[in-house]
Image 1 (cartoon, rainbow, N blue to C red):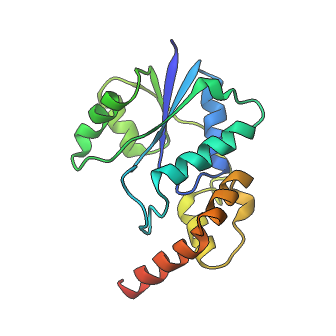
Image 2 (image 1 turned 180 degrees about the vertical axis):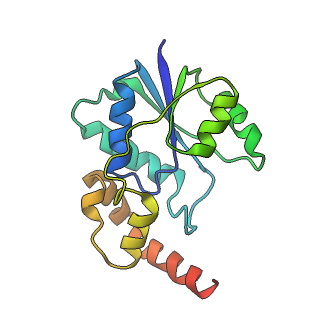
Length: 176
């Protein structure tokens, strides 16, 4: 089977992520979406749990036009403290794949060193579609909802994620 892998922390899942997934699905029969840093949450870079992120991704894909969710596997993957071993740990946790979709240079380097085909999806509206900026917008009461799917907004609101992000940001500025 022609299967691909896309890796992200999805903190939160946004329209750029959705565009990358749609891009990947045009090249393969099945896509593994690896939810990275699965063990982390309630941190400045990782405010959401793996379960919350899976819900954001799954709910968004379930209603997205042109996506057959039967061709998608969503798998949480924890970090390892040894970067070089991370791709090998990932391989033990997901089905076999032939290509990786990523724009992260560090991730690309490790997969290319293993001989894996790496494809860089086009960056969609990168000037505003990046999770750090979206989290900052939430913390600063600036507009963010147009940058994520309605399903992501719903999950964030249901879990009181706005308050969580604000509290995490407030704590990080006190301890900075």
